[in-house]
Length: 67
Image (cartoon, rainbow, N blue to C red):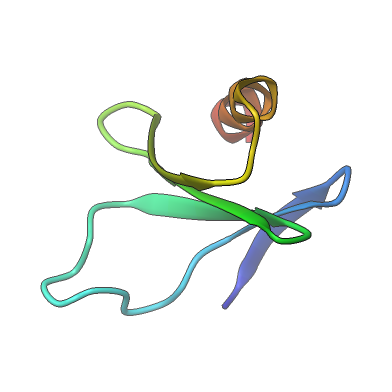
């Protein structure tokens, strides 16, 4: 799992060759036991969330947009 970047303990990463058929462009985020997946294109949207608060999800979305 290649790491894209890490900030404040949040790891932003992807899996190569994920899904069959291949999934649209997305990024995974993990901090502790919490994890989420955001679609990237055509807009940044949350696809899965396990444990993050809405405040954290908003921050994550902003970080994805910035980076």
